Amino acid sequence: MGDEKDDASKVNIFWKIPMFEFLEAEELDRLYSLCATERFAKGEYIFLECDQPRNLYVVVKGEVKLLKQTEDGRETIVEMAYPGEIFGEEAVFDGQPYPMTAQALDDVELLSISRGDFFSFLRDNPDLALEIITELGARLREAQNTIRALAMERVEWRIARVLLMLSRKAGVTEPDGVSIDLPLTRQDIADMAATTVETTIRVLSNFKKMGLVDTEKGKIILRDKKKLDEMVSEGCSHI
Image 1 (cartoon, helix red, strand yellow):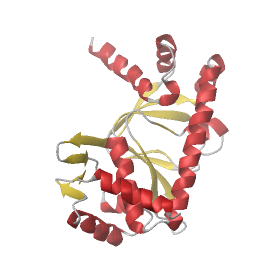
Image 2 (image 1 turned 135 degrees about the vertical axis):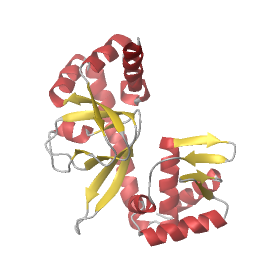
Image 3 (image 1 turned 45 degrees about the vertical axis):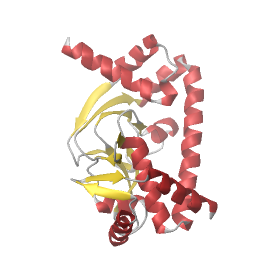
Image 4 (image 1 turned 180 degrees about the vertical axis):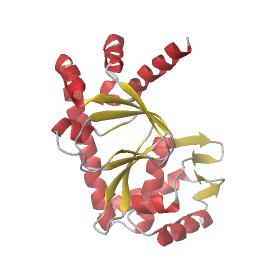
């Protein structure tokens, strides 16, 4: 009985992914039957940048960091994948090596589906291919906006953008604000905002004095999300 409930919850994870939400229950069951469950401990690598694409992954539990290596050998967080999100799809679709490294931020549970099995499923569900094209187009647009923002925005706007992104993906609304309870270091936030950890600490301290954010037992709490939204909108208007 417990295994059946666990399987049902994993099938339901596909409903959280926009490109799969229109599939019928039978199709979702078949998709799940093609998946394997994989578990990785905190800090373990799921795949490395330039590895050949084997699988597409869906996060069931935990969080995954997607990293790029800089010219000086440092790893910079480019993106995060949370429960109900997929990663590794770019390489699976075009057959080129993975463009980023995937590392478990904490203990994670994933569903993996091989490239061959996924393409077989797509052949039987051509409408899904159109959904994927739409999703990839949206991701490309978001990536372009991020690149432009990192190049031209003030660092305060960039850090506000990162905090809002984290709140959308992993935030929990509480009476005193939106809580982001993730095992992220200040260095991780600095990497996502393309700045230094010293600057990140200074900006977060200023945000705290302004009543925009607070920190509590390892969590970041957005006290005034509306003001942070306005800050990011102002940044966009100056690009």
